[in-house]
Structure formats: C-alpha cells, structure tokens
Length: 252
Ligand SMILES: [Ca+2]
Ligand SMILES: [Ca+2]
Image 1: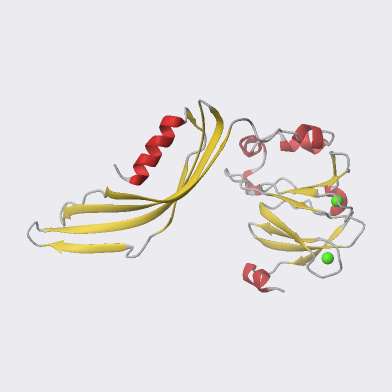
Image 2: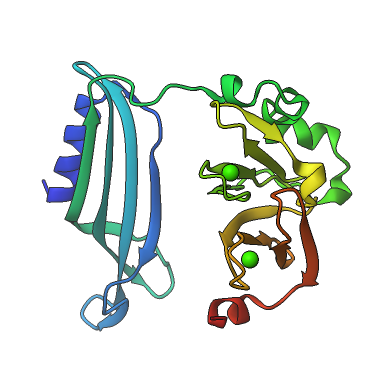
C-alpha cells in the first residue's frame, strides 16, 4: 500500500464522520505528460502525473474535530490500442507533506447573533443562504450558486476597534458593520456608501492615498472599485476608479 493510500485509510478509520472532503488538482510535476509507442503490443502507453491538494475535516471518537491538509503526487497510466482507447488507471500514489490539526473540544463559539442581531439586516439577509436568495432574486441580478463571498476586518473609523465588511452575492448589498466597542456592531452600510450590489468576492482595506484613513478596494466580479475614506468613519466616496486588476497589483 502506498503512503498516500495508507494516510487516507488511517484517517477515514479514525474519523467517524468526514464533514469536509476536498481535493483539487493543483499542478503536474514534470514530466506532465508522456506518450510511448509499444510496437510489440500494437498499443500506446500514456502516462500522466498530477499533484493534488487535499483537505479533510472529520469528527470521531476521542476528539472533536481533525483537519488534514496535504499533497499527493499521482501517476496515471493507460495501455490501449489506437482503435480502443481506455481509461487512465492509478499506477503510483505518493504522499508529500501533510499538516494535521486536532482539537478535543470546540474551538469557536458562534456569537454572530449577539454581535449583529440588533441590526435588521442580520435577520433579513445574513441568516438566509444563497439557495434562498436564488429563489427570490431575479436571475438578471447575476446571483450564482457558489456564494464565495468573503469578510474583511478593518478599523474604518480609527477608534482602535475592528469593524466588519461583509461581501455579498450579486443582488444583495455588501454590508459594513461598525464596532460599537461593546462587542456589538452597528449597520452603517447606507451612511458609508459601500452597499455595492455587484457580486463581490472580497475587499481589501488599506490607506491607498496615505491620508491616515482606511480606504478599500472592493473586488467585484466585473472589476475592482476603489473607495476613498473621507473621514469621520461615516462616509466613503466612490471615486468610480475601476482599474484593471494588474494595475491594482502594480500600484504603490
Ligand atoms: Ca472601528
Ligand atoms: Ca486613505
């Protein structure tokens, strides 16, 4: 049994429930693809190598949750006559580095309702998932099924307490919540002008114009937008600067 399959078998035996299995092909170690002619068999041999990043999260006896993140190098091969191509079969499975984390009890407690629950937007929007909104919003809004929308943390009013900016799918406004300094947050989206309705993957807060206030680049599906913070922690003016992503990376 190869190293990779041993690790997978060991993990699945230890974990009673595999909650989050994810495997992504992240590359092809050289040589990536090889084709060899086998004259005695009248066939060709094709060899393909892939590198896979895996992430498993599970629960089991004696622990609360375990996460394993690592890489496998897989080698696939097929021997087939030219007239009858066949499927690739796994020939070699090599385990590379792996990071394992295990906790005996829950690490985090969900305080979202305590922190955000006083805002109407929390119950009206945050508690509903993408599946719900896809049934309600017009398809023309461009809402998709994945909901890959991030959350940014930044001190927008420079009071020493981090504030939250929640990116949302197309058709729903991004939300800015200001820290009240008592563990709760106030929805200041309308005052800030950051309620962008476009599908937003993430947002980067930084002081782009060196005036001491946190500005933000909102990364929408149709291009990034730069908002400059005009002070007071209440309002950010959309400068309508939609620049190419590369230009954004090159900006100093
Ligand atoms: Ca703040
Ligand atoms: Ca600034």
